View 1 (cartoon, one colour):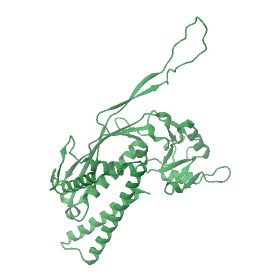
View 2 (tube, helix red, strand yellow; view 1 turned 135 degrees about the horizontal axis):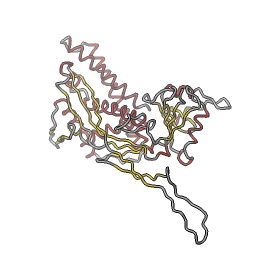
View 3 (spheres, rainbow, N blue to C red; view 1 turned 90 degrees about the horizontal axis):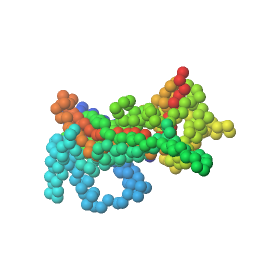
View 4 (tube, one colour; view 1 turned 180 degrees about the horizontal axis):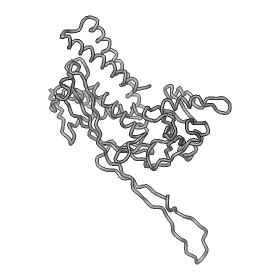
Length: 385
Protein backbone atom coordinates (compact mmCIF):
# COMPACT_ATOMS: atom_id res chain seq x y z
CA UNK A 1 0.00 0.00 0.00
CA UNK A 2 1.30 3.46 -0.92
CA UNK A 3 0.73 5.37 2.34
CA UNK A 4 2.58 8.39 0.95
CA UNK A 5 0.05 8.66 -1.90
CA UNK A 6 -2.86 8.35 0.55
CA UNK A 7 -1.48 11.15 2.73
CA UNK A 8 -0.90 13.36 -0.32
CA UNK A 9 -4.46 12.68 -1.49
CA UNK A 10 -5.78 13.55 1.96
CA UNK A 11 -3.86 16.82 2.03
CA UNK A 12 -5.12 17.72 -1.46
CA UNK A 13 -8.72 17.21 -0.28
CA UNK A 14 -8.06 19.39 2.77
CA UNK A 15 -6.67 22.09 0.48
CA UNK A 16 -9.88 21.93 -1.59
CA UNK A 17 -11.93 22.26 1.60
CA UNK A 18 -9.91 25.31 2.52
CA UNK A 19 -10.68 26.86 -0.87
CA UNK A 20 -14.41 26.39 -0.24
CA UNK A 21 -14.13 28.30 3.03
CA UNK A 22 -11.95 31.00 1.45
CA UNK A 23 -14.49 31.55 -1.35
CA UNK A 24 -17.40 31.83 1.07
CA UNK A 25 -15.37 34.07 3.36
CA UNK A 26 -14.40 36.39 0.50
CA UNK A 27 -18.02 36.68 -0.67
CA UNK A 28 -19.17 37.04 2.95
CA UNK A 29 -21.77 34.29 2.76
CA UNK A 30 -22.47 30.79 4.01
CA UNK A 31 -22.18 27.63 1.94
CA UNK A 32 -24.77 27.07 -0.78
CA UNK A 33 -26.38 23.67 -1.30
CA UNK A 34 -23.74 22.39 -3.73
CA UNK A 35 -20.88 23.56 -1.52
CA UNK A 36 -22.42 21.92 1.54
CA UNK A 37 -22.82 18.65 -0.35
CA UNK A 38 -19.24 18.85 -1.65
CA UNK A 39 -17.89 19.58 1.84
CA UNK A 40 -19.73 16.57 3.30
CA UNK A 41 -18.38 14.31 0.53
CA UNK A 42 -14.80 15.50 1.11
CA UNK A 43 -15.21 15.09 4.86
CA UNK A 44 -16.35 11.48 4.37
CA UNK A 45 -13.46 10.77 1.98
CA UNK A 46 -10.96 12.10 4.54
CA UNK A 47 -12.52 9.90 7.22
CA UNK A 48 -12.18 6.87 4.92
CA UNK A 49 -8.52 7.67 4.22
CA UNK A 50 -7.81 8.14 7.94
CA UNK A 51 -9.45 4.79 8.67
CA UNK A 52 -7.32 3.09 6.00
CA UNK A 53 -4.10 4.66 7.37
CA UNK A 54 -5.03 3.57 10.90
CA UNK A 55 -5.70 0.02 9.71
CA UNK A 56 -2.35 -0.02 7.92
CA UNK A 57 -0.54 1.18 11.07
CA UNK A 58 -2.34 -1.46 13.14
CA UNK A 59 -1.30 -4.17 10.67
CA UNK A 60 2.32 -2.99 10.78
CA UNK A 61 2.21 -3.05 14.58
CA UNK A 62 0.92 -6.64 14.54
CA UNK A 63 3.66 -7.65 12.09
CA UNK A 64 6.25 -6.21 14.45
CA UNK A 65 4.74 -8.05 17.42
CA UNK A 66 3.67 -4.84 19.16
CA UNK A 67 1.37 -5.49 22.13
CA UNK A 68 -2.19 -4.22 21.96
CA UNK A 69 -2.66 -0.89 23.72
CA UNK A 70 -4.68 -0.87 26.89
CA UNK A 71 -7.72 1.36 27.19
CA UNK A 72 -5.96 3.71 29.60
CA UNK A 73 -3.23 4.42 27.02
CA UNK A 74 -5.81 5.02 24.28
CA UNK A 75 -7.67 7.47 26.51
CA UNK A 76 -4.43 9.36 27.22
CA UNK A 77 -3.65 9.48 23.50
CA UNK A 78 -7.14 10.84 22.73
CA UNK A 79 -6.72 13.44 25.47
CA UNK A 80 -3.37 14.56 24.03
CA UNK A 81 -4.92 14.81 20.54
CA UNK A 82 -7.65 17.12 21.89
CA UNK A 83 -5.02 19.13 23.75
CA UNK A 84 -2.99 19.47 20.55
CA UNK A 85 -6.09 20.65 18.65
CA UNK A 86 -6.68 23.24 21.35
CA UNK A 87 -3.04 24.34 21.12
CA UNK A 88 -3.35 24.80 17.34
CA UNK A 89 -6.58 26.77 17.59
CA UNK A 90 -5.75 28.97 20.60
CA UNK A 91 -1.93 28.78 20.94
CA UNK A 92 -2.59 27.92 24.60
CA UNK A 93 -0.15 25.51 26.23
CA UNK A 94 -2.61 24.54 29.00
CA UNK A 95 -5.55 22.22 28.47
CA UNK A 96 -7.93 20.99 31.17
CA UNK A 97 -10.60 18.27 31.11
CA UNK A 98 -12.73 16.80 33.87
CA UNK A 99 -10.67 13.58 33.98
CA UNK A 100 -7.14 14.92 33.58
CA UNK A 101 -5.07 17.72 32.12
CA UNK A 102 -2.24 17.96 29.60
CA UNK A 103 0.23 20.80 29.93
CA UNK A 104 2.71 21.50 27.16
CA UNK A 105 6.27 22.36 28.16
CA UNK A 106 8.64 24.83 26.54
CA UNK A 107 11.88 23.70 24.93
CA UNK A 108 14.83 25.55 23.40
CA UNK A 109 13.11 26.01 20.02
CA UNK A 110 9.41 26.19 20.89
CA UNK A 111 6.71 24.17 22.61
CA UNK A 112 7.29 20.45 23.12
CA UNK A 113 4.38 18.47 21.72
CA UNK A 114 3.03 15.43 23.65
CA UNK A 115 4.84 12.10 23.25
CA UNK A 116 1.91 10.36 21.54
CA UNK A 117 1.74 13.15 18.92
CA UNK A 118 5.50 12.93 18.29
CA UNK A 119 5.21 9.14 17.94
CA UNK A 120 2.42 9.53 15.37
CA UNK A 121 4.65 11.84 13.35
CA UNK A 122 7.60 9.43 13.51
CA UNK A 123 5.42 6.41 12.61
CA UNK A 124 4.08 8.25 9.56
CA UNK A 125 7.64 9.22 8.55
CA UNK A 126 8.58 5.51 8.68
CA UNK A 127 5.63 4.60 6.44
CA UNK A 128 6.37 7.34 3.89
CA UNK A 129 10.17 7.07 3.69
CA UNK A 130 11.57 3.56 2.98
CA UNK A 131 15.18 4.50 3.70
CA UNK A 132 14.31 5.93 7.13
CA UNK A 133 12.27 2.83 7.88
CA UNK A 134 15.16 0.51 6.93
CA UNK A 135 17.94 2.51 8.66
CA UNK A 136 19.16 1.73 12.18
CA UNK A 137 17.31 4.32 14.26
CA UNK A 138 18.05 5.91 17.62
CA UNK A 139 15.98 8.37 19.61
CA UNK A 140 18.33 9.68 22.30
CA UNK A 141 19.57 13.03 23.52
CA UNK A 142 23.19 14.07 23.26
CA UNK A 143 25.81 12.47 21.02
CA UNK A 144 26.27 8.80 20.16
CA UNK A 145 29.76 7.50 19.38
CA UNK A 146 30.30 4.11 17.72
CA UNK A 147 33.75 2.46 17.78
CA UNK A 148 34.73 1.24 14.30
CA UNK A 149 37.60 -1.15 13.67
CA UNK A 150 39.79 0.24 10.87
CA UNK A 151 42.25 -1.89 8.88
CA UNK A 152 42.67 0.54 6.00
CA UNK A 153 46.29 1.34 6.87
CA UNK A 154 47.31 -1.66 8.94
CA UNK A 155 45.85 -5.19 9.34
CA UNK A 156 46.12 -8.07 11.73
CA UNK A 157 48.67 -10.43 10.22
CA UNK A 158 49.20 -14.17 10.43
CA UNK A 159 52.49 -15.70 9.32
CA UNK A 160 54.49 -18.91 9.58
CA UNK A 161 56.69 -19.05 12.64
CA UNK A 162 60.18 -20.38 13.20
CA UNK A 163 61.36 -21.50 16.59
CA UNK A 164 63.40 -18.97 18.50
CA UNK A 165 62.36 -16.17 16.12
CA UNK A 166 60.02 -13.41 17.24
CA UNK A 167 56.76 -12.61 15.42
CA UNK A 168 56.16 -9.06 14.23
CA UNK A 169 52.89 -7.84 15.73
CA UNK A 170 50.49 -5.93 13.50
CA UNK A 171 46.87 -4.89 14.10
CA UNK A 172 44.28 -2.37 12.98
CA UNK A 173 43.05 0.58 14.99
CA UNK A 174 39.72 1.68 16.41
CA UNK A 175 38.20 4.97 15.37
CA UNK A 176 34.94 6.61 16.42
CA UNK A 177 31.95 7.74 14.38
CA UNK A 178 29.73 10.21 16.23
CA UNK A 179 26.03 10.93 15.71
CA UNK A 180 25.12 14.40 16.88
CA UNK A 181 22.07 16.46 16.02
CA UNK A 182 21.50 19.14 13.38
CA UNK A 183 18.55 21.48 13.90
CA UNK A 184 15.95 21.54 11.11
CA UNK A 185 12.52 23.13 10.80
CA UNK A 186 9.41 22.42 8.75
CA UNK A 187 6.90 25.21 8.03
CA UNK A 188 3.27 24.59 7.08
CA UNK A 189 0.32 26.98 6.71
CA UNK A 190 -3.38 26.28 7.25
CA UNK A 191 -6.47 28.39 6.58
CA UNK A 192 -8.02 30.11 9.60
CA UNK A 193 -11.42 29.03 8.27
CA UNK A 194 -10.43 25.39 8.64
CA UNK A 195 -8.95 25.99 12.07
CA UNK A 196 -12.17 27.65 13.24
CA UNK A 197 -14.30 24.78 11.90
CA UNK A 198 -14.78 22.54 14.93
CA UNK A 199 -15.87 19.62 12.72
CA UNK A 200 -12.51 19.56 10.97
CA UNK A 201 -9.80 17.36 12.55
CA UNK A 202 -7.12 20.02 12.54
CA UNK A 203 -4.73 18.01 14.72
CA UNK A 204 -4.66 15.05 12.31
CA UNK A 205 -4.08 17.42 9.38
CA UNK A 206 -1.14 19.17 11.06
CA UNK A 207 0.37 15.83 12.16
CA UNK A 208 0.19 14.42 8.61
CA UNK A 209 1.58 17.60 7.07
CA UNK A 210 4.46 17.76 9.55
CA UNK A 211 5.23 14.07 9.00
CA UNK A 212 5.18 14.39 5.21
CA UNK A 213 7.50 17.41 5.24
CA UNK A 214 9.90 15.77 7.72
CA UNK A 215 9.87 12.52 5.69
CA UNK A 216 10.73 14.36 2.46
CA UNK A 217 13.57 16.21 4.20
CA UNK A 218 15.00 13.09 5.86
CA UNK A 219 14.75 11.04 2.67
CA UNK A 220 16.79 13.64 0.80
CA UNK A 221 19.41 13.93 3.53
CA UNK A 222 19.74 10.17 4.10
CA UNK A 223 20.17 9.53 0.37
CA UNK A 224 21.85 12.62 -1.07
CA UNK A 225 23.13 14.50 1.98
CA UNK A 226 23.90 18.18 2.14
CA UNK A 227 27.67 18.51 2.30
CA UNK A 228 29.71 19.53 5.36
CA UNK A 229 28.18 20.28 8.77
CA UNK A 230 25.00 18.40 7.92
CA UNK A 231 23.55 14.89 7.84
CA UNK A 232 25.40 12.25 5.81
CA UNK A 233 23.74 10.68 2.77
CA UNK A 234 24.49 7.25 1.31
CA UNK A 235 25.22 8.61 -2.17
CA UNK A 236 27.59 11.37 -1.05
CA UNK A 237 29.34 9.96 2.04
CA UNK A 238 33.11 9.75 1.78
CA UNK A 239 33.13 6.22 3.25
CA UNK A 240 30.48 4.73 0.94
CA UNK A 241 31.56 1.95 -1.43
CA UNK A 242 31.25 3.30 -4.97
CA UNK A 243 30.63 1.39 -8.19
CA UNK A 244 31.13 3.33 -11.45
CA UNK A 245 29.10 2.25 -14.48
CA UNK A 246 30.72 1.21 -17.75
CA UNK A 247 28.89 3.92 -19.73
CA UNK A 248 28.17 7.58 -18.96
CA UNK A 249 24.51 7.64 -19.98
CA UNK A 250 23.25 4.06 -19.59
CA UNK A 251 23.13 1.29 -16.99
CA UNK A 252 23.63 -2.27 -18.22
CA UNK A 253 22.63 -5.62 -16.75
CA UNK A 254 26.33 -6.30 -16.18
CA UNK A 255 26.53 -3.13 -14.09
CA UNK A 256 23.69 -4.26 -11.84
CA UNK A 257 25.19 -7.69 -11.33
CA UNK A 258 28.58 -6.13 -10.51
CA UNK A 259 26.90 -3.86 -7.95
CA UNK A 260 25.23 -6.80 -6.23
CA UNK A 261 28.41 -8.85 -5.91
CA UNK A 262 30.25 -5.82 -4.55
CA UNK A 263 28.61 -6.76 -1.24
CA UNK A 264 29.72 -9.94 0.56
CA UNK A 265 27.23 -12.78 0.07
CA UNK A 266 26.43 -12.86 3.79
CA UNK A 267 25.18 -9.25 3.64
CA UNK A 268 22.76 -9.59 0.70
CA UNK A 269 19.81 -11.01 2.64
CA UNK A 270 18.12 -7.71 3.56
CA UNK A 271 19.23 -5.54 0.66
CA UNK A 272 17.16 -3.08 -1.38
CA UNK A 273 17.58 -0.69 -4.31
CA UNK A 274 16.60 3.00 -4.20
CA UNK A 275 16.55 5.05 -7.40
CA UNK A 276 14.80 7.78 -9.37
CA UNK A 277 11.62 6.89 -11.29
CA UNK A 278 13.33 7.57 -14.62
CA UNK A 279 16.21 5.26 -13.67
CA UNK A 280 13.73 2.56 -12.70
CA UNK A 281 12.03 2.96 -16.09
CA UNK A 282 15.36 2.45 -17.88
CA UNK A 283 16.11 -0.67 -15.83
CA UNK A 284 12.61 -2.07 -16.43
CA UNK A 285 13.52 -2.30 -20.12
CA UNK A 286 16.64 -4.39 -19.48
CA UNK A 287 16.52 -8.12 -20.33
CA UNK A 288 18.79 -11.01 -19.53
CA UNK A 289 20.36 -13.35 -22.09
CA UNK A 290 17.11 -15.33 -22.39
CA UNK A 291 14.94 -12.30 -23.07
CA UNK A 292 13.44 -12.06 -19.57
CA UNK A 293 13.03 -8.67 -17.94
CA UNK A 294 15.46 -8.18 -15.05
CA UNK A 295 12.98 -6.10 -13.04
CA UNK A 296 10.14 -8.38 -11.99
CA UNK A 297 6.78 -7.52 -10.35
CA UNK A 298 6.33 -8.97 -6.88
CA UNK A 299 2.73 -9.38 -5.67
CA UNK A 300 3.93 -10.20 -2.16
CA UNK A 301 5.29 -6.66 -1.76
CA UNK A 302 2.11 -4.74 -2.59
CA UNK A 303 2.64 -4.84 -6.38
CA UNK A 304 6.22 -3.63 -6.02
CA UNK A 305 9.24 -4.79 -7.99
CA UNK A 306 12.29 -6.88 -7.26
CA UNK A 307 15.67 -6.66 -8.95
CA UNK A 308 18.12 -9.55 -8.51
CA UNK A 309 16.05 -10.71 -5.53
CA UNK A 310 15.92 -7.34 -3.72
CA UNK A 311 12.97 -4.88 -3.57
CA UNK A 312 13.11 -1.63 -5.52
CA UNK A 313 11.99 1.73 -4.09
CA UNK A 314 11.56 5.00 -5.95
CA UNK A 315 12.69 8.39 -4.67
CA UNK A 316 12.45 11.75 -6.42
CA UNK A 317 15.41 13.03 -4.39
CA UNK A 318 17.89 10.83 -6.31
CA UNK A 319 19.33 12.10 -9.61
CA UNK A 320 18.31 10.49 -12.89
CA UNK A 321 20.81 8.91 -15.26
CA UNK A 322 23.40 11.48 -16.33
CA UNK A 323 27.17 11.51 -16.66
CA UNK A 324 28.96 11.75 -13.32
CA UNK A 325 25.78 11.51 -11.19
CA UNK A 326 25.18 9.15 -8.27
CA UNK A 327 21.94 7.46 -9.32
CA UNK A 328 21.33 4.31 -7.23
CA UNK A 329 21.77 3.39 -3.58
CA UNK A 330 21.98 -0.37 -2.95
CA UNK A 331 22.54 -2.54 0.08
CA UNK A 332 21.35 -3.29 3.56
CA UNK A 333 20.34 0.15 4.82
CA UNK A 334 20.67 -0.90 8.46
CA UNK A 335 24.30 0.09 7.90
CA UNK A 336 23.08 3.71 7.90
CA UNK A 337 22.62 4.96 11.48
CA UNK A 338 20.15 7.76 12.23
CA UNK A 339 19.55 9.61 15.48
CA UNK A 340 16.27 11.54 15.60
CA UNK A 341 16.53 13.22 18.97
CA UNK A 342 13.43 13.11 21.20
CA UNK A 343 11.35 16.22 21.68
CA UNK A 344 9.77 17.55 18.48
CA UNK A 345 8.90 21.18 19.13
CA UNK A 346 6.44 23.48 17.39
CA UNK A 347 5.69 27.18 17.20
CA UNK A 348 2.37 28.72 16.19
CA UNK A 349 2.75 31.79 13.93
CA UNK A 350 -0.57 33.60 14.16
CA UNK A 351 0.48 37.15 13.27
CA UNK A 352 2.99 36.38 10.50
CA UNK A 353 0.31 35.14 8.06
CA UNK A 354 -2.63 37.17 9.37
CA UNK A 355 -2.92 39.06 6.05
CA UNK A 356 -3.39 35.69 4.32
CA UNK A 357 -6.09 34.61 6.80
CA UNK A 358 -3.82 31.71 7.71
CA UNK A 359 -1.75 30.42 10.60
CA UNK A 360 1.75 29.02 10.30
CA UNK A 361 3.21 26.09 12.21
CA UNK A 362 6.92 25.36 12.49
CA UNK A 363 8.03 21.89 13.60
CA UNK A 364 11.58 21.88 14.96
CA UNK A 365 13.59 18.67 15.31
CA UNK A 366 17.23 17.57 15.60
CA UNK A 367 18.69 14.69 13.60
CA UNK A 368 21.96 13.27 12.31
CA UNK A 369 23.03 10.32 10.18
CA UNK A 370 26.27 8.48 9.46
CA UNK A 371 27.26 5.34 7.56
CA UNK A 372 28.65 3.14 10.32
CA UNK A 373 28.67 -0.29 8.64
CA UNK A 374 30.23 0.66 5.33
CA UNK A 375 30.42 -2.93 4.07
CA UNK A 376 26.61 -3.02 3.78
CA UNK A 377 26.10 -0.19 1.26
CA UNK A 378 27.04 0.69 -2.32
CA UNK A 379 26.52 3.92 -4.26
CA UNK A 380 26.18 3.56 -8.05
CA UNK A 381 27.76 6.45 -9.91
CA UNK A 382 27.59 7.08 -13.63
CA UNK A 383 30.85 7.22 -15.55
CA UNK A 384 32.08 10.76 -16.22
CA UNK A 385 31.48 12.10 -19.72
